[in-house]
Length: 279
Image (cartoon, rainbow, N blue to C red):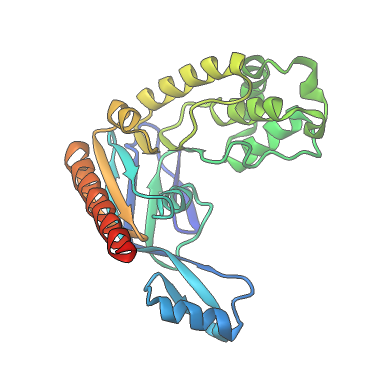
């Protein structure tokens, strides 16, 4: 069972409680081609602290700003917020896809990121080879990779296509392979970003059932969705992100009430602005 503390990874004994510690994490993304004076001027006039200018006069986006929280064994947390608020970025930081520019991250436990369907799957190699590649990226042992291979082939229903390059697959077949690999092992920490089905309609129901099972059994769940019903079904806690900042963290009903209240205020303000502009 790995512990990841930023770039370092060590092993912890079986049975150790899963844990996530996020301390003052910030993430920034440079805007390619932003060295031009006109873009810098436009962003400056927008007066938004979401943007900054770094070395070589390159503009960057502050995707996450000074986010801190701790999750322990048994916690199930929903991520709520508008599009662009930082939910997907936070999930990718927890999965080790993005490195923070500041702060400290510690993740204890096997992580299964169900973020972008097909992430890590290569088109130029076979289904079987993708199982070995993804298993290696997931820090599985050779024995674990060998064990999950038949399970992936069975659940994905790909049959003899497992021996063919993924470039020969349809989009639905590719999604089935990716989903089957990602969910072949029971994770201790499950990260989910709006994924509740994979492949064609006949496979989607089976995938949703497996997803539900994993979410219920995971020791820590971090789940981003715009569906309030799904969030309340699986989560007891919630984090509200806005503009890359954490606005609230606590019991899900209270956080959702705060978030919806803010959305209503913004909607009312926009309607008032439109009415004033039209007068």
